[in-house]
Length: 212
Image (tube, rainbow, N blue to C red; front, side, top):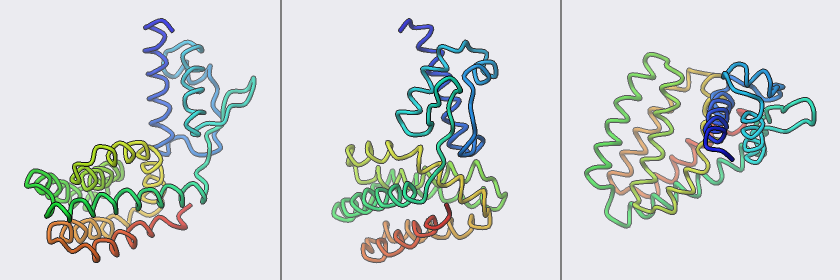
């Protein structure tokens, strides 16, 4: 694929994927390659390539000669994503505890994240809080210094973000509760309270169950 076409396909892919993850394009929405291309100022060919990539990631279902439909988030997918999140986050936490806790660098990053969450929750800033929520959990995983865990977690991020957007936009009132959960999780991580951390993490992720 020529470089110019590849760049255009990347642009169409990133823009469409972001709209799906943010909830701007809801499940069941019919997308036309021509219309998406017109919105982005691109020809149909790079949009087609973008649709193929998104279909491979199960964000879209292709419909011959019509375009594509945004795949809805199913209860089964949500449960599977949450199960994988818990597995990766729990395994990462065990490594953090075995190492005597997170490094000073990660402690500072987590504390700064929590302070930012507090302001975003007070402002009911959905986009900002979703981003900070994601960052908190990613920091907890990266604190394990396990690049394989971090890589697998990165692969789940798009689906995780989509779930967060669904839940937090349905009920922004969950912001304070989520922030409180994060504060308690961080306190356990810093204090070496492994069993309590596991209990809190399970309860925290259970908030997403049934939201779909």
